[in-house]
Image 1 (cartoon, one colour):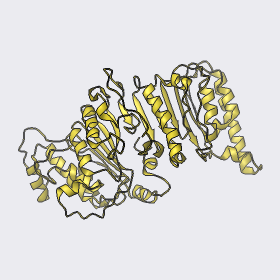
Image 2 (cartoon, rainbow, N blue to C red; image 1 turned 90 degrees about the vertical axis):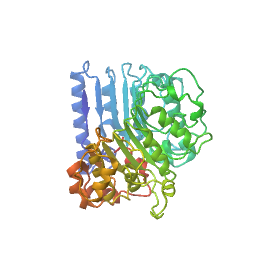
Image 3 (cartoon, helix red, strand yellow; image 1 turned 180 degrees about the vertical axis):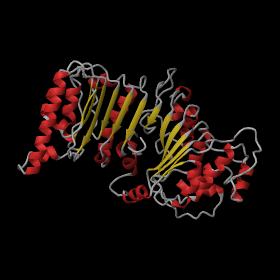
Image 4 (cartoon, rainbow, N blue to C red; image 1 turned 30 degrees about the vertical axis):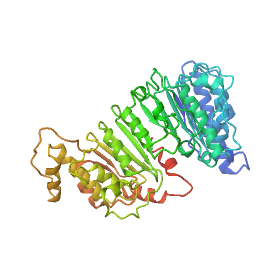
Length: 471
């Protein structure tokens, strides 16, 4: 495996084209030395090199691409300037032995109306097993593209931020992605889609529903981080749920009431029930119309869940007073504090089912309602439940501020939390950190909270800020 990373600013090679200042000359010399070293390595190990990773600005050089011609590569991982994406695609599809291709783009993005889609014409390589495109233009769908993608096992696409600007651009991004997903449904193991252009609520409105059939759909898929609309699962009554994704292990789901024809909350719960026995790791993406009752219903279904991540894609208003009935509370948009209350057994009704009894890891992203007391009660109560205490006994001990209680059950009702990630909680008060750290591993720091607070910019959506962190 050969990896070449350039320790220069991504724009340094382009800046070096201009006036020959001392800094520009130094940048050009650095690039030339790195290219010479790359050429030497490839000449000496040409017949043995199978994996190559290149970064900017070396990957933006024409001579770099010439050095790679003739190699029998299995995988190619490129980080290049935005305008060179098509050039690298052309080189990659000329390598007959290539199995995995990753392209990440940097630098200023061309406006989506001006960026032509990536074309995979005249391909010589066999069908790819892994394809990852981050920040590139959308793909152009034609027979050569589908032939390359029909056996994909890992597919990842991250639309550039500018692609979410206009509805027509979102459609140009979404339709090719959806076509590839369904072409590779028999072999896909991981599907990861990020960016507002993909997660937008109106992106896939024109897609047809899936007819019932006897064949399993996505039989090998174990990680799904994509809108259900992309999978054409928003019309779930038309789908034989028992044959959907029988091996799904990791799911990222946007919990918003479906706005498409035929899409209902009942259909969403049907899907959750169909994949419930295998789900172990879930990420719920919360929007303004994510009712608390719907999230609670999902968590009630996933009894085997061990890891839960909650990411707020939209800011949730907290103006509604807390002194209200349970029914009114369940109709509210979900906040982090309310989620902690839901996961704490007996908060609303002592007879309520314990949600996610196997939960061990809980993460919050882009959250502003948690102060600390809610998660402290959650951690303390689950510690006592793990010691074979009943809910009533545990809550009595919690009221007396003592975690020492006599077990009154033969088996534990729930596991204790082992990891609590509060990195995205901007308003968390650190007074309770010593208590929390006694019972679980806590991820939080004042510096990270401050960074999260100042990272909130109107021009950047929560999805694009957090998708990489929770990928």
